[in-house]
Amino acid sequence: MGCLSSHLCHAGAVGKKAPKQPSLPKTVDTEYVLTRPRKGAKLKEEVWQTENGEVGHYSLASINHRICGVDNGRVLGYDNSHEYDHRHFMGPWSRLKSRTTEYYPGASMLKYTSCGGKKMKKKVNVLKLDTGTLDEYVKRSIDRAEKLDRNEKLPAEFRITFEDPADLLRVLSAERLRVLYAIRKRTKPTISGLAIILKRDRRAVSRDVKLLEGLGLLKTRNEANPGHGAMTVVEPLAEKYHLEATV
Image (cartoon, rainbow, N blue to C red; front, side, top):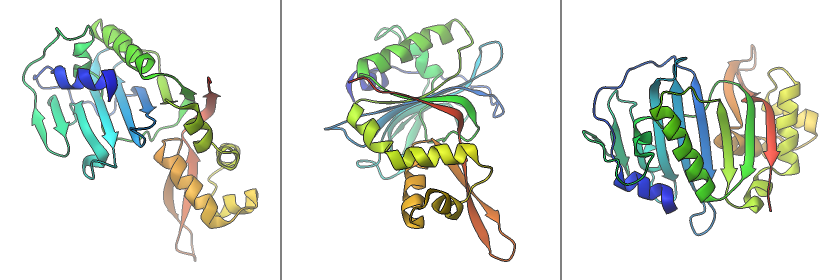
């Protein structure tokens, strides 16, 4: 897991009870998608803040469904979703009672950042998809941690970064980009409706929607369809998708 895993293994977190404020807006939702030999693994960070910069909830996780079949694939993570700071490892979790800060300047990030399987549900203005190195991702996380230590209100950041540009291009194929464009331009499109609009096989559209939902780029929900049971409605999770790849 590289440098970020070493923070997770060495650092602790504050053991006092965290404030429970489920209605807080999410400030940070970032993912880092790793490439071979760790293909399929990702690092995830989430932060919810009050208007004055205090952190109400956080999560930081290393996720790999190939080696962990429980807890949404979370191999290792830290969060305060049970109202206390705690550590997850391959399913079981344990409460943390102390913090160790000598290992890196942003060790107290573990008091703030969330790693766990919550998917983004509310629509954001811009969702960025880009490429970058693991060191760059870790540096951004530590920079945010230092600002959180000072109770600074973070600018909203919703971002998915791929270690390998080829993975970004493979995931966002031309047909999947057409799906994202179509759901942004239409109100409450269904999978069947998208298949008609895009002139594609419904099963192929359904597979693309499932993949894009797994990445956190869109969401689906079932809605009553009078006389025909239920229909699956597809909705975007961003007003705009900003794509940037560096080779």
